[in-house]
Image (cartoon, rainbow, N blue to C red; front, side, top):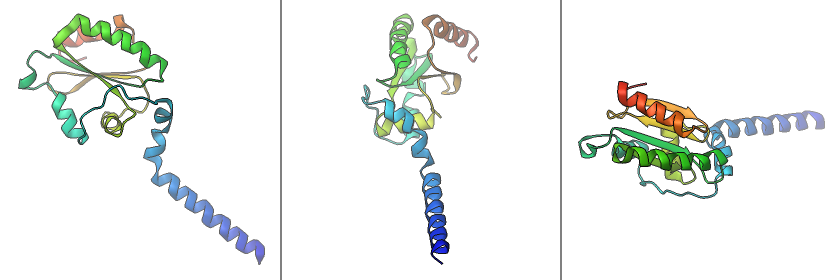
Length: 160
């Protein structure tokens, strides 16, 4: 009788834990990123993801911009810190033609943007064309030469 009650109790506890894990899977998928990152360099607009994204689509109010480059990373991430140097050099090359947004995924607003773009690991570079379409995505460190080559290819062809 005692073993039967104990088994039922263990079964109920196990099922409860499984249900909790299933319901919080989205929070758990971001846990690794959130654990590594302790500081947000950029606080983005406090709005829903679609409205935020629309602000940076290349429309009439952004005539000079030919591409938008989003860099998703974090302060505690060594490849992300290396990417900051690369991005500074790339921005100096392309100037106003490149809409560069460095997104630190620690704040809630930034995590919403990262989720909108499907960012699961960092660093991630996403390039959008003038229509706001994603034309390039890379996960991990990308050298200045590799990134510049991709940008030039996109500028020539319009898409990758």
